[in-house]
Length: 372
Image (cartoon, rainbow, N blue to C red; front, side, top):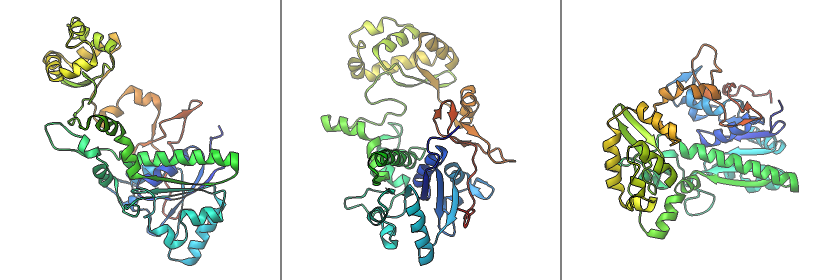
């Protein structure tokens, strides 16, 4: 089957997570992605253990399906060869430190002027404007500065970093979306574009609902643990053998949940009739539900909730997730390395029933020097 981006040529000078993930999305959708690395390689190759065939699994996860060449930007001949390669490509993606591109003549204004059809995607830390435009940043810094850490954690405990690299991965996704939009416009106009994204802007996007609420009330809700700042009940409840997440997200589902709990009268009581009223009685209601849920197992409650269509699910560990029949049915993970049990993802999308990516390997440092 022909892939959607087949024939598209991409040069990616990505490092660590965000830039490489953008490149991988484009590669898994069919683009030829040439990854440019410093002679010593992407730093993320060494971010381990664990390692597979000498590279960290985190590096492999986000760099499969690409070709690798090396370039020392301080070497004039290598730098000029890179610029010519970029000019022959459709897309250039990078997440280099802000001062590096202008120093070596590979900045957006210079290259888009020289190559008018080029889609130039600049993925930065804090954005292309403002007093912090040249400030460096990594995932934990952005989670902290953008306010995400302040929102995460148990209400009775310390704040907590989000356990996955949500900033890096989402910024890679936003950059890929920007590239695809710019390509669509180029099809219509013949002109390339300068696409700017940043880790900080992604962080601001993740806090957008909280910003909207604060801008109206002037207040921030406390950290919710597994709960929700605007819905009740909508969280995990402890059962006799562990927690079960239950999300009756409207009054109809709340009525069904109350029936499962053995209290079909609760939704007709003025104090619990609507979500607004339940929020006013939040602590009381959650305590009443908790006293009932703890009496039976997760399987007991889940079966009853499923029978009435109330969304619910156990709080799984990652190993438990990988044992689920649903995961196997979706075929999202593969073992591309012979002799290794390492599992790596395809994209979380299928086109005409075919998973985008998954079975490719990551290139070795400079594996394709002189070959592409």
